[in-house]
Image 1 (cartoon, rainbow, N blue to C red):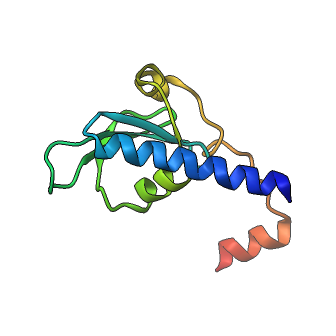
Image 2 (cartoon, one colour):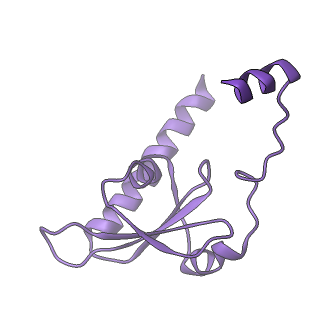
Length: 114
């Protein structure tokens, strides 16, 4: 019980840290380790949406909409990271897409036949 309370408080602190950096106009780098994706937020002007860029393990950077569920979850669940980690993130091999999931024979037949 105490551990879950501490984890919740730490999560709120990390979220506040990310949001404060975005609000201050700094370039912010943060990661959602559950989804294996990192983000770069560039805040251009007050009153306009920030630009967000994302990278997955083994993939190059691409622009993503500011209201994407990836971005929202990363702000709420993510952790701030350094620019160096963001820059080399696409070079890291991830496990999310490379999991070897074995389906039982009956399930596999049902999935194939529909």
